[in-house]
Image (cartoon, rainbow, N blue to C red; front, top):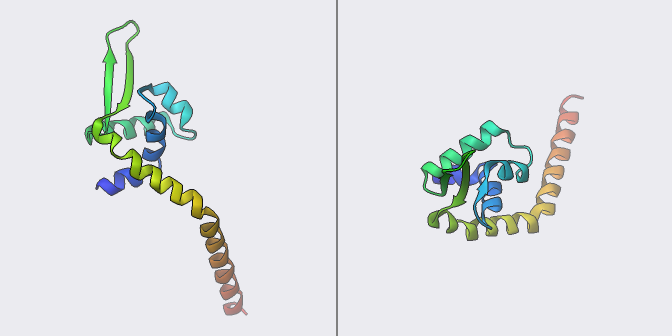
Length: 114
């Protein structure tokens, strides 16, 4: 369950945005390209429920809401940075492996269909 949360598509990107401090929903959405408002809302609610993100409502007109990492959420920054660094370091090898696999699968299919 916990690994699903930190391993989903959007959580690491949200953490990257929040690592420098609390942000409003619109700022998070602008920084996380491709996320829909619905999916971002679901992600933030789940992270809040898990105790990784806090939601602060300011009594202003219009109301202002900010999201920030909790102390528990901050403990995930190191592991997420390590995974990101590993992915950046090995991305070329992974892409080459995918290409090799696809080429091999395509060659196998061509032999079978003859």
